[in-house]
Structure formats: C-alpha cells, structure tokens
Amino acid sequence: MPRLAALLLVLAGAQAQAAPPAVVYDAGGKFDKSFNEAAFNGIERFKKDTGTAYLDFEIANDTQREQALRRMAQKGADPVIAVGFGHASALEKVAKEFPNAHFALIDSEVKLPNVQSVLFKDQEGSFLAGWLAATTSKSGKVGFVGGMDVPLIRRFQCGYEHGAKHANPKVEVVANMTGTTPSAWSDPTRGGELAKAQFARGVDVVFAAAGGTGTGVYQAAKDLGKLAIGVDSNQNHLQPGTMLTSMLKRVDNAVHGIALAAKNGSWKPGTVVLGLKEHGVGLAMDEHNAKLVGDETKKKLAAVEADIVSGKIKVATYTPEAGCKY
Image 1: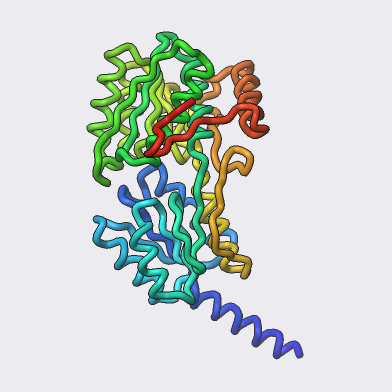
Image 2: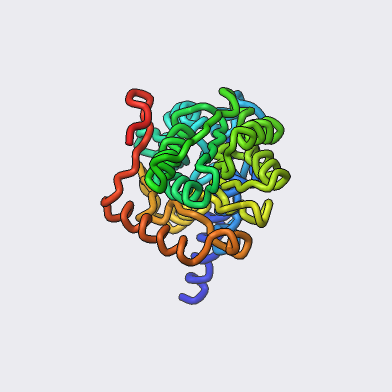
C-alpha cells in the first residue's frame, strides 16, 4: 500500500504539471504597474503558494488575442485566464472550440458552460476615491483621466464623480479620456499632458484610471506639487508624498482564486461580481500616503464604506443607455 500511495502521488503530480494555468494579459503588458501587473502578481502568488508553474503571454496587438487563447487551450492549460474586457469576443469563440477546457475572463462577461466571468463594482471603489479627493482638495476642483473611452472607464468616472459630489456638492470635476484605441492604456506622455491641463484649470487632485498611462499623470502631479490617485494596483510607492491613495481593484485575488480553484477541483463556470463587500475593490493606505490621509479622515472614510456595503449609499453606475445618474 505505501508503494501504491507513493505511485498515485507521483501520477497526481505529473497530471498537475501537465495542466498549468495560463494567463493572457491585455494591452499594456504585465508590467504596466496597474491592471495587468495585478493579474501577474496574482498568478505569481499562486505559483509561490502551490509550487505549480504557469504559462503566460503578453499580446502586442488585438489580432493576437484569439491566437494566444487558442494556443493555451491547445497546450491543455487549466484554466486559461484572459485579463481584460478586450478578450471577450476572442474568448467566446475559442471557448466554443474547446468545450472541455476551462476559461476565465476578467472584467467582462461571456455566458458559456466552460467560462467563468469575474466582474468588479469599479464604481464603489471609485466613489471612495472621489470622496477622498473632494475631501482633500483645497481648490474645490478635482480631476479624472481615463484610459480608453469605453463603458468600463466611464463607470470609474461615474463612481468618482458621485463620491466627490457626496463629499462636497459644490465640487467641480474635470474629466478627460486619453483615447479610443488600446494604445490609450500605455501613453504616459499623453497622460501627463492631460493632467497638466487640468492642474492649469485649478484641479489639485486627479484620479487616473488609465493603466500605464497613469504613470505620466503621477509624474505631472509630483512635478507640480499636486496630488494623484492610482488605480488597480497599489501605486502609492510610485510617487510617494504626492500619491493620495490608489483605488485597488483586486485582480490579483481574482486570478489567484481562479487558478487555485482549478487546481483543487472546485472551479465553476458563471459570473462572479466583486465589490466592497467582497473585498474586490478599496483604497490603499500605507506608509507612503500616511501623512496625506489623517486618522480622522480614515474614520470618516470607513463610515462611508460601511454605508455603501449596507446599502445606505447606493453608488451610481454608468450605462451606455442612461449615462451616469446620481
């Protein structure tokens, strides 16, 4: 029996090695210090926790999405995790081709029996960012720089504006989008230009929901002595002292959980939505912004968060049909 048990363990180990998880990143690359890097951190944590290797791929253009997902499925990856809404149509096609494979999609929804979709209540985390921005602002003007002009980023903007208005009904919100193509996620020069234009109009806190483009926004805030808010990953360390906070989107936890579930056999298809209640979004507080956000403000912020979780505050969300209403 001991020999049989040992043999079964070897076979199980070989099977696990034959089916590693795979991650296909979105435009901007896995070291964008934002959305993709959060996914990278999640799969790296999975590797560290389980000792299981993984496959990954960084797309260079939209035409590679379908090819990359298909290649991972052909290699037997379990699951194949597509990071970003831009993969939705390609994943839907490939998932139909490989009905016995498991797929996961971050930030969009594909309704197939072999796909798990993970969505976030971005508006809830953005509401907190807007509340903190308006509470901190001395000019009464706060800014928003979005990446690609898509409904997802409009949802960030809507929550941010709602939170700012909740803190100060008279606050002025100045908003710009970087562009309309995937390159809008990786254009720090343009991000810096938009931020500087907003600062010239009196804005003193700006939230960048723009992937790698945000690094240009943070640099502009540093150069001009203004404040910036990061997104997705904790970016407080990028420009310590002028990063008010970062709106965390726990893509790392989502990717880690998806890979772990597939490994232990508990993976399920369907749609999962993560908000403040599920610790899927939130604000980053650490040593890098400790001097910018005092204890009293943190207490008030915690109360606002509790009101959102309880439903006392109903955060506005953007839809293409109705826009942003609050």
